[in-house]
Image (cartoon, rainbow, N blue to C red):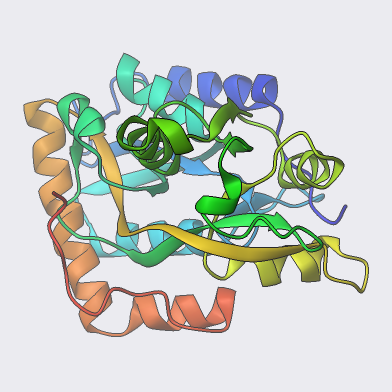
Length: 280
């Protein structure tokens, strides 16, 4: 495997070190120079979005965009730490993370706990990703089959849960895989632990290129849902101002073409929203 994915333990260790090192230099406190240091929990287990390379380099679209946002905000200094889906949410819950980014889509449950950015930065649809030789490409064909979701609060899992509630005679079984690396997820899918997993519309081609050893191993099925991705913040006054300041920077980066340029650099095509859509 080309990339070294962080384990949960390592993620917690790195995050804990960052938190300890920042102390009062967070969004709530700030530093003696007046520049507020912001602990950012960023995705580290998704190819092209954010990964830790074998040499320790942390890179990807999410990371590059955060650095571009940081450049525009003179009053803040971002400490961008590699993390995973669940630990970012834990960090937000405990106040150890000031800003979380992991392609978070809007849902009402999250909106009760966190501030959502008012600027979306990724425009995507989520689809079923299935083994290449599977015929279960549609909602109907997956009745009674097992859907591998990231977590109970992941947006695609919530969509499937809602579908199950509305179609109890056509329900899919849900099984959550949590914070494991992409290679392990794909292996479990192909070996039959799950019949389908969620994936952004372009990711099947990416998985085949990265992990197929010259052949297709997965393909795209029905669309689960369409949405934008947003940054998340703890719900308090300090982080409301941080959100508003970051929103302004994101809008500028979308308007001046930086988002598009970074999208094309990391993906080969543009994933930038055509216009801002406030989460709802």
